[in-house]
Image (tube, rainbow, N blue to C red):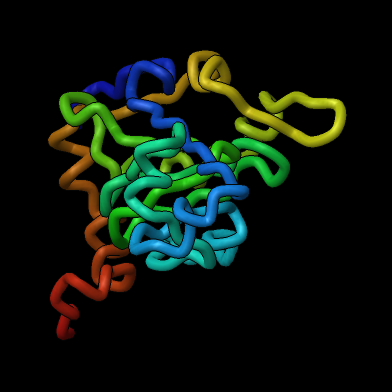
Length: 176
């Protein structure tokens, strides 16, 4: 087994910011693009597939929200800090969350998902705020993690075991 290497979390991931289209403009809402808030993925499930609210393409274009892709990670950054899920489909999201995409030459999103779930207490201890807890992009630079080489991340037994039970409905159902 190779040496694990120490990284700043901010060097391992691309962070994606969310946003909210103006609620006063009806043409931005009730479209075909699911729009996530933490209440949509605060259920302990690995994957999130749907959102209570949706936006239109115009709402996406006229706001600071972004689209997270299937397989990317979302983490709550305000209030209830550290709720983590993977996207089961492409979705937009609000500014109280960060989208996370592993830098492909360093890490794997599935491995990173489980690692992040295990370091939620570190996020909480690095949060701040008088009214409610918050993490920022700077928080990711203050957190250090140890990673095995990418090939070992992809080959680890734990992710393979979890993939047997934690599958996306668009993937074939494993047959024992």
